[in-house]
Each structure stands twice: as C-alpha cells, then as structure tokens.
Image (cartoon, rainbow, N blue to C red; front, side, top):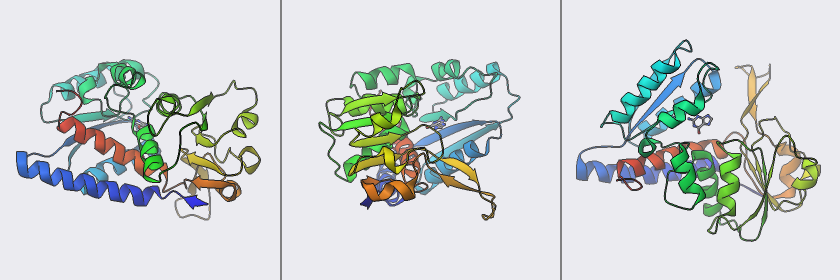
Length: 293
Ligand code: GUN
C-alpha cells in the first residue's frame, strides 16, 4: 500500500512554480498576481484562503485579499468582481465559496471574466473542459489528475466511482476521468444522494474519488482489494483532546480502508495541498496568457 503524499508533491510543484515565476520576473519585470475575495466568517473558508495566500507568497506571486463582512449585498459583491475583471494588475481571481444565502453564487460566477477565472467555475471554462479544449481546470480535480500522473497510476480501462456530484469536484472529476487522455479513459460511475446502493457501486471501483462531505463515510467493506482511493473530504470533527477542539478527517475511514488499497491519500496532507498548487498553476497560465490572449 502506498500513501500518496500530497504535501510533499505540492512542495515539489511549488518549487517548480517558484522557478518559473523567477524566470518571468527576470524577463518581464512582473510576477503573477492572484486576488481572492472572502465573504463572511466561515472558519474553514478563512483557513483555505489563508493557505492560498501563503502559497502565493512562497512561490513569489503577488496576492491581494479582499475580505468582506457577510452583510455585503449581492450588488456590492458584483461591483468588486467587475473591478477585478477590469484591473490590469490582476491576472486571475477567485471568490471563495460558499457565499451567504442572500447572494446568488451562480450570478457571481457568471460575472467573473472567464479569462481571469482561475477556479475554472465559469460556464465557458466548464464547457471547454467538457469538450477537451484548453481552459482553466477546476483546482481540486486538476490536483487529483496531477497526483495520479506523478504516481504513475494506470487509469485506462479502469472503473472509477465518484462519490458526490458537486460542481466543484464530483461532476468535473467524472468528466475529466472519462475523457480520452491520460489520466482518463476510465469508465466512470457518478454516485449521489439518490444512488440506490452506494456500497454495491463502490465495490466495483478500481479508483474511488470520495467527495461526499460525510466524515469517514467509506468503510473497508465498501472497497475492493487493490483499489486506488482518493479522499477529497476535509471534515472537522469535535475532539476535546486537541488544543483547537477539533481534528480533520476525510470522507474515508483511513485506518479501516488503507490496508485494502494499492494507493490512498491521507487527510490532511493529501488532496488539500494539491488543490492550492493547481490554483497557482492556473494563475501562472493566466499571467502568461497561455489559455486566452
Ligand atoms: N470552496 C471550496 N473549494 C473551493 C474552490 O476550489 N474555490 C472556491 N472559490 N471556493 C471553494
């Protein structure tokens, strides 16, 4: 059994990105610039955005963090998005999700200039991804593809079962793993809350992508011997023995499942750090105008 070390892989990728940033700086005198908009006080969102900004600094990017109270109106947020769209100093930006209930996430996503949409959430980028045209891939699926590639995991002809159909992870992952490419060429089953027997589906999987948001949902009796298990979940569960009062667990019961797998990602230190490096890769592409001129 191999534990896929996302933290170490992300460190290597960040070194590669930093070297490219230094080269661009030498040549053009400018560095990639990512902006992040963070609304409200959700602790998990604050932690993710902090990690994105810190990684920018580690790689020599410029970063701008715009923090707003959750009393912000939809119009005010749309105005911030328009300003970022028009600001020539910003190469790419993200609006951290989820947004408060009174703001329509879809409207905000649509308002982002697709050329600066380094999250890959705008329908133009999603459509291009679906058709296999160059675009910004959503960060978590992009990070998972890189893990599979760098660990040389065979995907062609494999049966992949994705748990969860979110726009951010499950749905794009199912599209990317079924495309004619490496990593890809899988036969994909996308499971969700209406799936009749998730255990039965999972038992057929050579590759499991767990993105369901339920702590330790996947148990050993749901996993075939030798499966590759990618755990996207980052769930906070109460733990009074920890100083901060909680610990992080994935959607997979790691201790039960690990022994059955050929490869498995841990939580923390698996998919999470790869998501951040993928966002940086997209921002680098934006700064170089690789996808859109
Ligand atoms: N919320 C959870 N994951 C993400 C992400 O990748 N991007 C944004 N903008 N919000 C998120």
